[in-house]
Image (cartoon, rainbow, N blue to C red; front, side):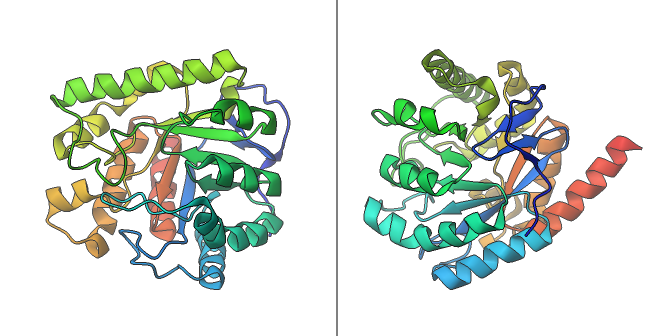
Length: 291
């Protein structure tokens, strides 16, 4: 599979996301396709748990228009139980080994340092970390790889985050999210990370109430003041189900509606399950913007 991306090298514009192998052009929004190699993901009910099925699914997402593949082996749905590093690698290792040959941008969705390092040794381009590299020694251990990183805000941990979400109003939760992300990028830059490597994610649904999630979307553009690209993940989230009274399998339309609103508010990367339909919506949004 051929790659539409520039080869790795120092970009001359902050509108690039520098990763291990690619400088990803953010002058147009990118689509990150979700590859969940888990038996208990909230949206796919484990249908891509087997490596061969997950690999076929990843290839299909590229055909449908994904710019980046985000491969994960542990569910981060509310109430999910953690697994150990060996089990996580058993799930994702074969998928990564195959996908790395395709010469397309690969992201690992994992907060576990052991898994992150094994994936980077294979050549993975991005670490998408729901813990924002807060684990002991993670920042120092990942720095030499020159990988891209996505720092996400999460209140608590997946097993308990929706039992004890952020307190306060939407504006108070927004301020807390913004301050956390500002602190994390500052810590990485002080440690020697180039700013071009860093993307931020407000963590829709990760320890936040419905009203707080909606306020984050409404005021998302204020996060651009931090000076970093935004990765946004609204795909099939429970907030959409609450607002539209829809089951997980019925949330494609509200997911795309949320993504279009996120695009209007400066989103650079959309993390999605439904790549084909999201690509169609993005193409229309881009055409209107450019006409």
